Amino acid sequence: YTLGPIQSFMFLLGIYCAGGYGGSISAILIHTPGTPHAAATMLDGYPMCQKGQARKAMNIALQASTFGGFASAFALLFFAPQVAKFAQKMGTPEYFLVCLFGLTIIAGVSGKSLIKGIISCCFGLFVSTIGIDPMTGSTRFIFSNINLYSGFDLVICLIGLFALSEVLAKSKKSDANTKTHGLSKTDTGKISKAEYKRMTLPSCISAVIGIIIGIIPGTGASMASFFSYNVAKSISRHPEEFGHGSVEAIAAAETANNAVTGATLIPLLTMGIPGDGCVAIMLGALMINGLTPGPNLFRDHGPVMYAIMIGLLFVNLFMFIQGKYLTGLFAKIINVPVSILTPIIVIFCYAGAFSVNSSTFDIGTVIVFAIIAYIMNRLDFPTIPVLLGLVLGDLTEENFRRSLILSDGDWRIFASSPICIVFLILLAVTVATILYGKVKAAKSTQGVPQNG
Image (tube, one colour):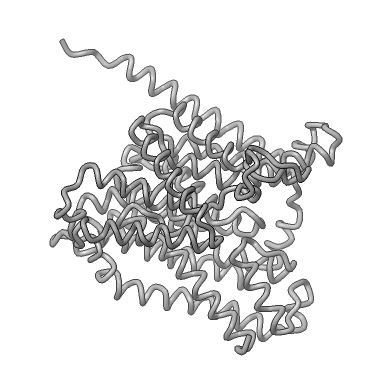
C-alpha cells in the first residue's frame, strides 16, 4: 500500500519465486512438500536424501529452479504479446482436454500398479466434488455439515496426505532417539558432468512445458511439475530410476514449476487475467498503484512494465545466491533427532491447517487424510494420484460440463478447433503408449523363467 508499483511488485515476485523453490526443501529433506507442486520433486528428492545425497538433491533443485525461472523471465520479456494471443484462443473445450491430458500423468506416478493408481486418482476426483456444485449451486456429499460447503482446501489435504502420514509412518518404525538419515560426509552437493548431461534435455523440455501451462489461466505449477515429470520419464534412458532418486526427475519437476512463475504474468499483464491464485494478489498490487492490466498497459506504462520484467531476472538471481549459500544450513535439519523433529512437524502441520480458514474442523480434516494416506501406504496404494485428482478435479469437471452446455450436449465440441484436435491426438498417442508399455512389461514378466 505504501510502496511504488515497481517496489511492491518486486516484493511480491520475490515471495512468489522463492516459494516455488522453497517448497522443494522440505519435500527433499523430510518427505513433506512445502507447496502442492513440490510433491513431484518429493518423489525422487526424498529417496536421494535417504541415500545420503541431500545436498546434491537440493543443489539440483536449486539450479533447475533458477533455470526455469530465467526461462520464464525471458519468455515474459520477449514473447508476452505473441504468447498471450495463443492463450486467448483457449476455450472451455481446450481447457478440458488439457486437464484430461494431465490426468494421463497417473501412469507415471502410480508405481508398480496402474490399477491402484487409477483408483487413487478416482478417490482424489471424488473428494474434489465435495461441496457446492459449480454449475448449479446445489450441495454435494456434505451430509448437512456447513464446514463442507466450500469443499476441502488443497493445502489441508496436502498436509494430511504427506506431512502427517509421514509422521505416522516414522513413529512406527523409528526409535525415539534415532536421527532421520543424517548428512553424509561424502555428499558435497556437486553434480557430475554426466548428470548435467542427463539433466539438460528434460530441463529444456520442462521449461517449455512450464511456460505453456503457465500462460493458461487456472492450471498452475502442480500440473506443470507432474506433467514434466511424466514426460521426463518417458524420454529417459533410465526410467527405472524414477521414484528411486533420479536426477532427471528432480530437474524436470523443479524446472517446470519455476518456469510457470514468469509465464503466469503474461495473461495478467496483457489481458488482466491472473494465471493462478498467487498472481491474483499481484493484480491487486497493480490496481492499488493505478495500473490497469490489459492491452494498453505496455503502451501507457511501458517503463514500469519493462522494469518489472527485467526485475524478474534479478529475483531469480537473488534466489539462486541465497539458495546456494544456505543449502548446507537447510540440510542440517535431517540431523535433528526424530524425538525433537516429529513434534515440531506435527505442531506446524496443525498450525498450518488452522491458519487456512481459522477453523478447528480443518485440523480434524488433516488427521482424517493422514489416516487415509497411512492406510493407503500400508495397502501399497500411491498417494500422489490422489493429489493429482484433487488438483485437476474442479477444473476438469467445470470445463467439461460448461462445454456440453455451450454445445447443447453435442460431444463434437471437443473436436471443434485445431487445438482440440492436437490434444486429442496427443491423448490417443499417450494412452496407446501407456497401454503398449504395460502389455510389453506383462509379457516380459511372464517370459522370465521361474527358479526351481
